[in-house]
Image 1 (cartoon, rainbow, N blue to C red):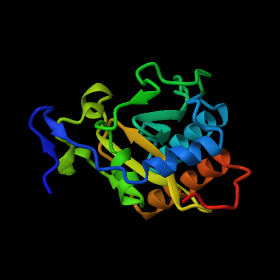
Image 2 (tube, rainbow, N blue to C red; image 1 turned 30 degrees about the horizontal axis):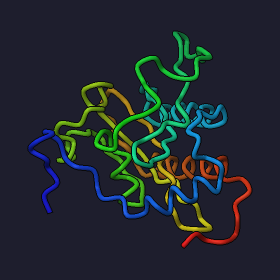
Image 3 (cartoon, rainbow, N blue to C red; image 1 turned 90 degrees about the vertical axis):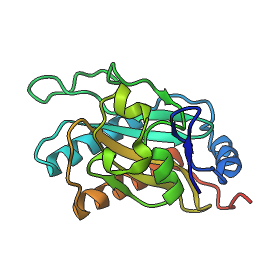
Length: 197
């Protein structure tokens, strides 16, 4: 089924059939107030640094993204100053905490329910007209879904983005999965055992 929307000049986001369950779970977990979390900023920074080390030191930004009617970056990596030391700022100045569902690649990662490595985002046909590519200069993406194991509901994604094409290998994909699991553990440390229906 074609997803390109002539009126907007971009591809429509996949239909999010899990959204009502995700909204209910976020409310149950106390995560519906859309606040940045220092622990997730720290996790996003560690993800960016670890992925950078695997790619020969490429400059990458890490994001922990909770997806509802839009995308909310509950965790953003701390940019590094010259010399590789953290600047201590919670968020890169060029990155806002929210983004439309029609931008970026996290909605596709959420829909796939598995890691999504894009060495060059232009290799993915649905990148046509993607605002993240133009606003943020994104050339590469690697993300994994944050799946809440007791319910099977995906809360969003943990991802890294970069401004240079990057060859993601199996080690990098496995790294993204580990950070996504760690993000879920931070978001839902005391999970109820009853699955939402």
